[in-house]
Image (cartoon, rainbow over all chains, first blue to last red):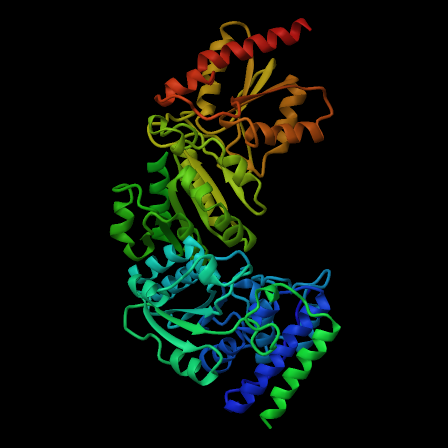
Length: 289
Length: 312
């Protein structure tokens, strides 16, 4: 299917409160997508909402009307299971119409439970199997350096994803090649599908691991759009070094009963739970106005 | 074959600045010319094949045409899932070159042998699988891979392989088999280094009055249906010969064509490794003989099979 392109203008002038409202709207969209599909990774998408808003509304040099613009910054959602958040932010940023979100996981449509390159405007790589995105971004960053293209690559990894050995192969290569046009962001929500990461396969000392692999590290509150944006606007943190932002987040953020509870990694709320989620998100939204 | 491939990629890189050469800490000096003349496009990723495939995919997403080269079992099996998702699912122009087809690294043992790679690569959607029979085909395959849209796996032996024929009459074409010798009693369909052995078998058995056709299948996927069906029709008996397991490789590819499309009754035998690793150490020649894949053993097997069939 060909997705309809919305000719929405760039929204450079959105103020902080608008972006906070957007976060509530995206959380509602994420939940609605999963509920209408009867399945989906809600909680891993909810933890990434503010990171994606910061990227798509503050940081990335992109043109939604020309998703193949060669000079564009690339964003790869390496934790592909968080795709509902990516689809929602792409729709909000004008890569396609919001109605397309209704096709999520529907028979015969392009928008699946993991994002696919070539099928959806704005999706830069097919992901879903963990530990792939950083390597792909290295290839893009190397090509950009060789071509004198000033575009940058941003990759969002899950914390559980960092259990994959290939992430560390890539981490070594990025610093070897001095890729200061490459930025990794970790959605450090502290939970895997089966429990807390510290109990299953601990990452700490996490920042020190990245530092030891030659990356320049910053840590932020991943739900503070201003802090995430300010930090990402400073990349590269050091010349000739790749940058990594460890974003401390809450899995299931915004819906109290989903927060920090591993059972919500891949689960859809029942009717009662859904109404409660709507109520909480509405109350949050009201509190902003 | 490896030097012929390196020469082709070097020449292509001179003509086309999209061509990159990636390796994982192998081929210490064979890439020197490429590295000297195209330093930015020659990238050594260290001993990390999974990352190498992902990096190649990223380069291809940026419009480059990378060749990814290391020892065959490592560049196909260690990073199988990166090949599947990053290269094949996204249908990118990445060319994998596996050096050490079959038992080319004989004495280095089973970790370095590649006798399942064709089966594995052949199963992947969008993947083209090429198994050159001599240096000329390796050279031509690399050239063709630059022009080809989509992922390609090229399986090379190592060095010292003889030329199959002195003068080439046909241009190399992906997906097109080549009849190297005419014959009416049976057909030997071979790939890679086994093509030379097939020619030797045919030569040997011609002295015993058995007249064998020899078909070279340098592209295992997509396979040349016409040349297989024509050989079945003309000779009634087909043998496949490969330095690979009989499971999933050339033999299986030919069997699929015959089982589904042949209208004739065909006698058919796969010659290759019979679902086994090499259990002892040895040179390529020693190990081939031990597994019944040297010219003498294959000649006997083929002659007995043909005589047995004619008695029936």
